[in-house]
Image (cartoon, rainbow, N blue to C red; front, side, top):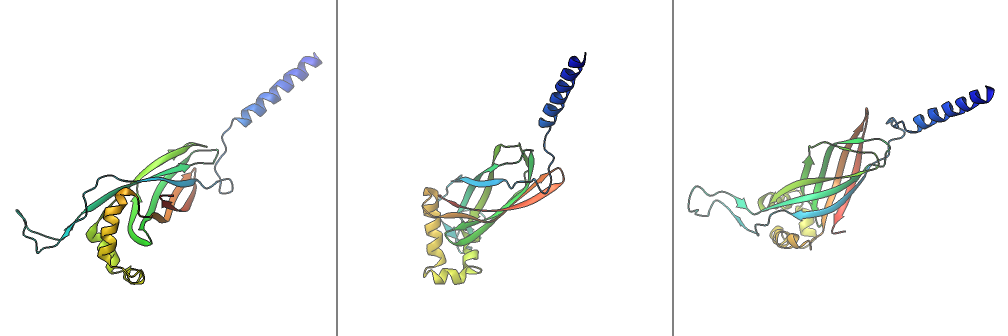
Length: 196
């Protein structure tokens, strides 16, 4: 009888240990590991060439205004969760950089859960137009343009004609991704270059 009691106790302790081992880890500030954010690719989703016109043009119909070629792009990121529990991506923002020039700020408002130990992808859209980037080169980046001994128009034409071939360095700077897990919230900074 004593022997049976010992076997039952050992079996019960073993079951208790196995059930504890299978319990999920509770998220805490101390055990939260920062997710890994990697830029997988940059894609030009539609190409309309390089063009620009202002209100002096005589349109076939309607009134002229300042119009320019758009450059829609998609930035695809891999986000790896190294934690033993799922985390929620709850905010994603970064600045698009062509060569060394900040040209656009982008925000993604979709949320998604990333399972423990898994990798999800997020695709973030950015739409630039020649006029918008021209203004950024004429005002906040004017000194940098002069220091590179070039002009805003030369940069714009280079970017709009070469970026579809991915021959201009594209950067992601000042990135911030917000993650949450059961009351724990962390903002993780990130940067990236493309092509790598």
